Figure (spheres, one colour):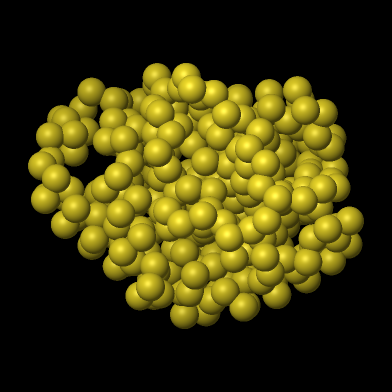
Length: 296
């Protein structure tokens, strides 16, 4: 059972990164509340909006290098989620609360002509937002994210069979610190080829709010966005990793995104889940080429 969970996590789910600050100037905190909130967001620069959505358990700072290397004269909004990155947890359901809150944030702040760049779970959020606000989103970049990871990781298992108070979730919650850290280190070593990032990935799994990590992951396993894809009308770039088999991975992307009409799928070479860490220059060029008409 443990290896099954690790296999699921390695391939599609978690996105964890560094606790270090951005190292970027003019960072303005937009959402600073002492009570629990679904997310916190920081902004950099000015102009039309570009939203950076990290994956599960990942701080928004994982996008620091990407922001510095994309030639976008826009205002960057960098998100971090409740229960991770030192943010207080919120009540379940977790994913849908975050999704709805980001949609409300976009409406409340009257954001338009939006670019969204999302990794892993952030890619799921990008799809949900673009489907709900098609008139406000101009382009999205989806990195290492499937609309329904359950179909690939747990074939023939219906969403209704997954629930918070399951024996397996109980096992995850009751793991002691040493056991959990050992599991986290195994996951980290299989999510990036970049040796300098593995310790940070491990730390973010370990330091996450445990209930958010366990129950939030259940939310993601239940997720199926394939029926929402026809509502996404903006141009979409989907970027996938080569690990463990590039041919099979691309076939999965093509199958699951078959209902998305305006898309381009590109696979990175010699990369794992954090392909922006493993092939950074390639990723920056690929993203910049896709966004060349959206620089301002």
